Length: 152
Image (cartoon, rainbow, N blue to C red; front, top):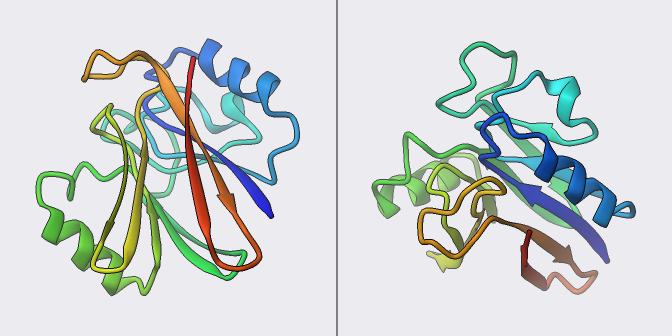
């Protein structure tokens, strides 16, 4: 089993990032879906992508990882979240079976056209008034995926 900590949208507040790291010292991967609003080294060991508010820092727009038998796209999603069809098309174009994305500030875990879309919400402020959160994603050897919302 592989354990992934997935965060997004801290908007310059590094306290939640530090708390996630302190609470999860044994994750295999740490991913951040953008709107860090701080330099990459400030959130290490998180690997991040550029959000729509990260223009002043050097982050790639998206990343693709092959982990535990899965092909995963990490992106912020601000160009795609207004249309489920655009998200699915982007995933298919990149031949991925999992998409990690942010931008909406709302936790979500859904399957569309056989592709798993996971949004950890915001570790700063969720727009659905549910409180700041992030996700733990577990990839099991048999191919199953478990997603856990973790409130801060």
